[in-house]
Length: 403
Image (tube, rainbow, N blue to C red; front, side, top):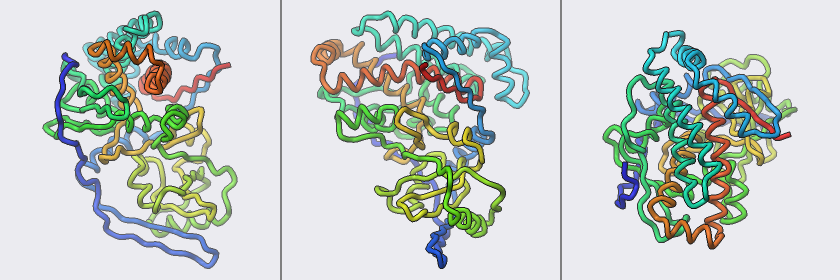
């Protein structure tokens, strides 16, 4: 697998996702705005949505742990999946009770063991050679997750490569091409398989991918003036009675039913145009929310989530030190899950340190803003990739808090 290619790829674009059939908007005497939109999904989008809805059909249990070593605690849990019984149970749960084959069990166990060895090596490696250790550890975690649904061998391909740049992260890009670990992981998580199955290669800015990770929000905002692209969200703990009434109206307009209490979720709309624009941007909106939105009159768009529990909200959003976020589609219309974005960025940094050693050494010596961004990305990725893999293996959402 060569990482040293330089090529110009066509800008990848996703096919049209849906066609607008109708839109209704009403304002009652109290000023409550209700909106209802009807769409005809494309075949590709319908397939992708079905995968997402299967993944989010049941809200995963939230497991909170307090520890003085969050990374060690994650790996302590992951080590269970080097054993046959734990992996067999995980595969059986994923397949609706179907008995897994021995080859699949062996591939998941092998991937976790290799990931553990690479992560341990990364923690003791010199910064000059550390990024490839972290990337290969992350790649094996990705393989473990992919083999939860994939019943055949993965091709010996990363699925991404990084063309040469002028040395600036702002101008760097990543090309998604072919079917490799990246595409297998994204598909297993309900995302788009960019550049796979005969589709055009997709070229995406490194900065766009960095800004798609909410955990990078503070770093990117301080050093570049551009924070995360993800949508900030918050739970409305005591919603205005108007919202309850509007929710009932919205359910009637959409042919749904207003049943029982729900968690109200709000997005600030200062930089957004319409609720339709938000729906179109939110990667997993239909799988998370009832299909209507209302304005609370305070500059927020509000939805009722499908569940009533606080845990539902916490497990269906991206939880970061800077608040909660919803994943957002990339500018080309594609959806890449958080784990896939981290994998692509780690491959980029690995390529930089391994094949462009002088550029990497200069970055380490200069301690520039680009160095600070990469340093924070590596620190976040070390914990996040293992945590996300654990979530998929257990079908739970683990939250390890530092004591």
